[in-house]
Image 1 (cartoon, rainbow, N blue to C red):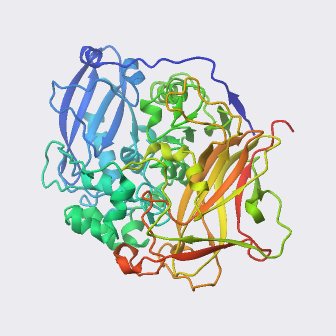
Image 2 (image 1 turned 90 degrees about the vertical axis):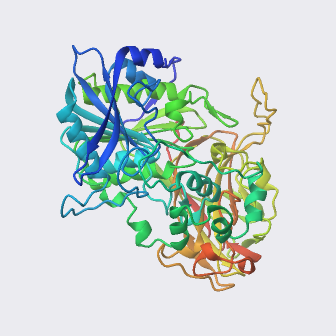
Image 3 (image 1 turned 45 degrees about the vertical axis):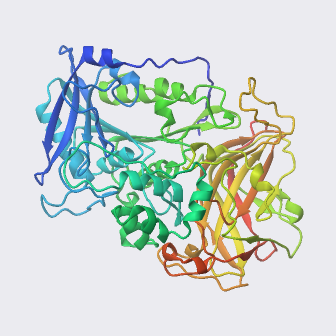
Length: 619
């Protein structure tokens, strides 16, 4: 096992191309590229004016528009980052099927067709293949190699497009890709709805587009910045359609009809199809990405498990959604990473690897996994992810809110709290009507004072404890209700004398700061199956297990490890009525009720959290 520590020893400067540079060095063309079923997809292509060289093609397929439109209207920057346009690539942007200026019907998270009977059986793999075939046959000056990339929804199109790839498709870089909208990406996490994210995005993105047209997205006006009050006043989920969506947002309507992991959602799970991938794969994600952290990890793991021909690599930094492409990566919220992490990645990882695969540039010798370790704030390289030398250890809950790696000696014990849907736990201390990207690292002291939040904390650590990999809670729960959500949060508690930033314009107090390292919800009705929910029997304990997305964090010497458990996280997660109803999306006001939830920690039913711990550097 090779582990290298990459130290930040420079300050990279990303120079934007700028509109004048792009106009001076590229010619823009617009094409309507025919697919095998006859539909034409609108594609903008920027070709370098220097015809003495041959260039690889970069392809970005997006539902968000290739704007600006018009052959004489240019983007100010080309490629994944401004570094690419100055290095020289042919860059193509395509409106995907049914969006903006492209023909055809748009289908959210297009289901992949593993078997295709004829030209009418199309999906994102065929549209990518047909686009690359047309570009290779019709564009001048290319070197016969194509690389694809995309962030978020375009990351899904990149991942889907590398299945059954065209021979010229040499590199795919899915970045924060969507993989499964029910179990972990965007709108649902373990079956629970991420309410403001789904509501705000779909209200704008989901408006009907009957024919090709220029983009015209309509944002929702909440009438207030106080999202907690807005969504609480909205009441049960069915009110969203009646009051605001008006049955005009088809995917919201469909989503409300499918509360369980049925064929509607299963067909949109990309993971089973990511097998025998031929292009080299470079998956990018952020450990603090509020939208698609799950997708990046799952794409990498699925390709690793199911096979790739030309290499499968992952890079995870301390980034918010897409921050690696448009931010310096120096900090997020109140948390500093002590270096421009995005600049380092763009200059030392992304561009060199693209040039190596597509231009025969020097091999940057990327390992299997290049991962940022927050807390200690260093980059590390691993031959596998999770690292092979990481050891499974278990954090146990003890009486009086104590937490340790040692099993409690008592044979009986529990902690309980009353969860009231009328007064849910806020997910942030501030007001916001959207899902904030900073919540992923936000101070949790506001939750520690709530009686409906259980808090367990360790003693001060006598050495660094580095976690690397997934976090696995096992909770034995009994409730006076018949349904419940469980939210488990892994938190880094800073020492009381931890210094404040200098300067400190926000006046933040970092002494005793409770940094969220990872938090995740589980809708406990799905404890046996996402497809077949079942109620609790009041007073009868049951085991609830799930997996939180991977972490790579160093709890430094003198810090403490904290676990919080609660049953609401509002309005980030929609409220569970705590009374079992067949379709939770159609629960009525009378279904919402208080319930007392009991977390058992006795010898027979020992609630706990399993983590992977790296060997200490001091051993």
